[in-house]
Amino acid sequence: MTTVSGVESGLLERGARFLHLADDWRSATGRAVRVAIVDSGIDASHPDLAGRVIESVEARVDNKRIVFDPSESGDSAGHGTACAGIIA
Image (tube, rainbow, N blue to C red; front, top):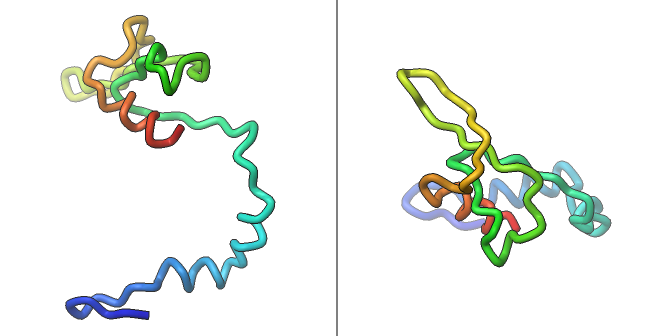
């Protein structure tokens, strides 16, 4: 356990021990996992994502309302693709 500028670290490690996550991590494979990313869409043609995107829908604010549009063109801003790349 360390303290930096009065902020205690190690909370994640204590929580993982309390929840006995090590047992789950040993058996987790990551296979058959689906993830939803609510963002600017996803460029499904990106080499790291090709063939792995089921659907791309853009979430945007229009006149103070959140609008969801099917994204035929991919990613309107690039942010959703970046998030998907981190997850992949």
